[in-house]
Length: 197
Image (tube, rainbow, N blue to C red; front, side, top):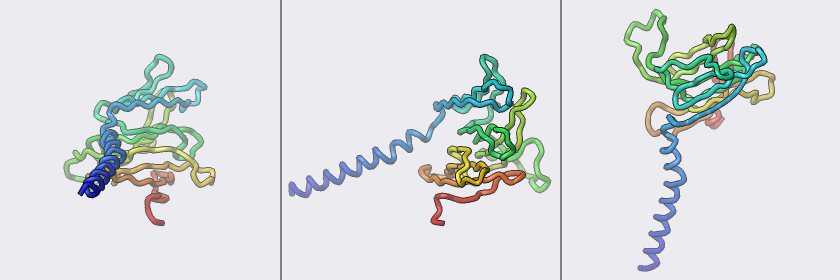
């Protein structure tokens, strides 16, 4: 009887430790509203570095003490990266955001209903002539982006967008890694790295 109790208590301890190691970090990371990220780059090519600062869900860009740009209050920024994502020789600001509506002020002619979904989007901006301007803005994404990085992962001389994706439904633990490539007007998914291929 004592052996059985010791075995059960040992199994319970293992289950509890697994819970602490696997589930608690996921739950703790479910709300990243207090995250802060600082990156620097010279997107406008003037020789002075801009500071790109994500605090909570707001992305702010400064040069010295001067604020150059801040994301609108109704955008919740998830993450961002800086680099030449469209391989035009100039670095861009690439960010994942949550916002209401799949489209902007101009909708496709085939979309006639309400546009009030709250989903994840990917935006690419350039910084030129002292202003941030959209290069490309996605409609609702099939999977929300959790993190992004701009790398040349296959040594072909072209940058790819490495994307960690989640899902809109529970469980929140689902994550996959994909590689996106710029193709003249938008991205295509080169490879889902979480698949068996």
